[in-house]
Structure formats: C-alpha cells, structure tokens
Length: 405
DNA sequence: TCTGGGGTCCTAGGACCC
DNA sequence: TCTGGGGTCCTAGGACCC
Image (cartoon, rainbow, N blue to C red; front, side):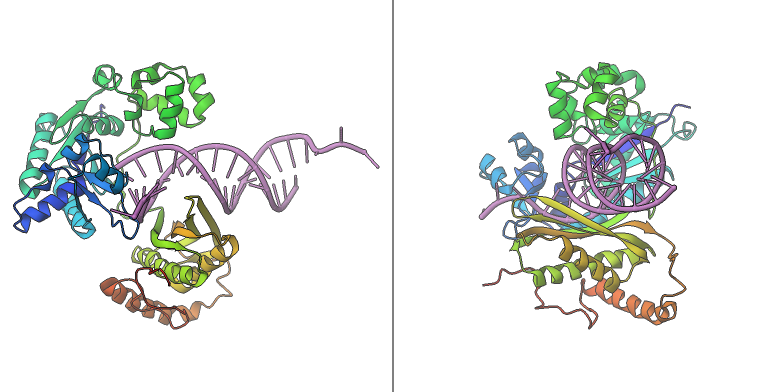
C-alpha cells in the first residue's frame, strides 16, 4: 500500500514561540514582523543565532552564526533571549493536538513531528484538505504557524515541508520527485551537510537531480556507506518507519560553554559534578542505567575531545558515575584551557544485570535508592546540585563560572 | 562581545584472541 | 631471522540533524 506521511514543521520555532509569548503578555509588537533573532547570551560566550525572523533572513542572517556577525549584517537587529520552558510547553501543545489524528506519530525534534496516516483514506477523504485543517487549527489554537509536508515516505514529507515558508502546505509524492525535488541545489537534500556538499560540488554534482543520476561507483568511492543513502534520498526513496519513540533515548548528555577558558582542575570537577548530577537524574527518571560514560570537551582552539569508559556494571548513581567521570578527565586532559565541557551517558539499559552482583553490596542499595529519590525530587524542584552528598567536595558555590582574579 | 547544546550514526584503527 | 589474517570489541573523532 502506498504510504501517506505528514511532516509538521513549526516556522522559525523559537522566534515564533517567543513572539506568541510576548503578545500573550500584552505587548503590542509582533517580533516576527521586524528584523529579529533569538540569541544566546554573549557575555557568557553563548552568542549565536538560534532562530531568525523572515526579515532577518532576508538580510542574510543564518542560524548558528554569531550575533556579532548578524548585527553587522543588520545594525537595527533586535535580539531576544531563549525561553526553553515556554518552548517545551508549545511543543507539547502541538504534539497533543496532533495525537488525535494517528497513534503513529514521531516527535522528530522540539518543533517537528511525523504522522503516518497510511490506511486512513476512509477517515480522511482528501489529505491536502486535512493538512490545511491541521495548519489552520494550530494557528488558531496556539498562535504560531507551521508548514505541512505530505509525501509517500518521511524523506519526501520532510523535503516538502521545507519548500516554501511560512504557513504553507506542500506535497512531494513519488510522481512529483522529478519536477519538484530534482531541480533543487544539492545542499537542500536532507543529510547533505557542508562537507558532503563541498565534495559533491567538486564532482560537478550541483542539483539533487544530478546526484540521482550519478553512478553508484563514483559515489561509493567518495562517500563509502553514506553513498547508498545519498543516492536513495536523491531519488526520494526512504523506507524508514515513523517511530513513536515514547521514552526511547539512546544517550543522555549535557554540555556547556564556560564563561572563560578554564584550566583549573578543581573548578572543572565542580562543573562536572553538577553535570553528572543532572544527567544521572534524567537517567533515573527514565528508570535506566548507563554502561558507558563519556567526558567531552573543547579547548580554546576549538579542538574537540571525547573520552569514554565502559562501567563494569550498569549504574545510575550520581556518586558512582561521577567517580568515573573524574577518572576519565584526569587520564585524558592535557591541561589545555577548556572552553566547553560535558558528560554523556550511553548504552542505556532498563535492567541492572551485573556480572559481579554476587559480590557487590546489593543490600545497601535499598536505603540509598530512597535517599536518592528524595534528593532527586528536591533537585528537580530547586535546580541541580541543590543537595549534594557530603562526600563530594565542592569549592565555592557559584552557579556560573566566574573568572577568578 | 567571535563561534550553543542535545542528539544519532559511521569509520578508522588499536587491542586482543585464535 | 622480513611482522599472516580473520573476527570481535572498543575508542576517538567526525559528519550530520534541529
């Protein structure tokens, strides 16, 4: 059976959501209509563009560029801070609304969902009409606009929702691939990033159609396994399923750019403790255990490092994982100034099967778990590391990392 | 006041075993 | 007395996405 997939994509999500918030609070100005961006805090070195208004886009401003550079392109640019809690709420509202149409719904990111409507043709006579209804409903109920892409697979639905923005419905059915997909520049294809595009352009592959017509052997020579995917995507082929991945996460991570480059081990330990507390708390809230622990960091020259270790058994306690985190940093860090640092937990599992369980202190765990639950609930409420075990020595209590004199 | 944060997947290469 | 080779597991790093 021919599949019917919808891709719903919020237009300029963070900016639209902040705009809606401001209007709700009674402000008169709709920031979607002026040259504006949502940006991080420059003083703490988070100064990049996270979302832009259509006017700002017209002036050449792109996502992820520095606010410094954005301001040069547009001197009267208005910059607004992020409101992640509010964004989460808007994202949840939209998701809840979309759930009425099918249980086969995948949250692809904070502002994108896939809907699998295959086999619902008795329910919905005309899919384009349905798409328009969804788009209008969201606008009327929540105040922000979306694009809806319709296709016979996820790739086509996603490419379709990207066509013309904002507040539009587009289709990209199999029969339309030649006319609608192939003329586009090759970097517009999903999964063609900067590097891939560069190589393709060198090979004189300039449009998605060029890519679709390129010999497999040539692509394999340059892109190895990625070649098959590129070739399929350029032909609008994608067999992947819409996955309602309820609580499925394969890794949990946190990282942050420090407000100054730090080469003080004690200070880094303090930051890592707070981060470990946060990721393990998230892990515990999913009733999971981690097998692999990694510390990632970036130095002042923007060189990235990641170092990981497998635990001897799946763990989720802050203190045990923190011990591993510190061990990893101690063994790998070359004492270069650190700009950004983070903790990642992966190989997550639901069960805590341990090879050495006969010997470890299983009995001690009951009370510890109860204490942990209480500590988690307090930290959930008052912020991470509000309560910390006495065994962890923390120097100072600053939440932000002030540069020492 | 120059360059975020949370993810997934892939690959090269080393260690180890037989 | 010129260091084969396949399989497996693991790590570091890179590319991509939003």
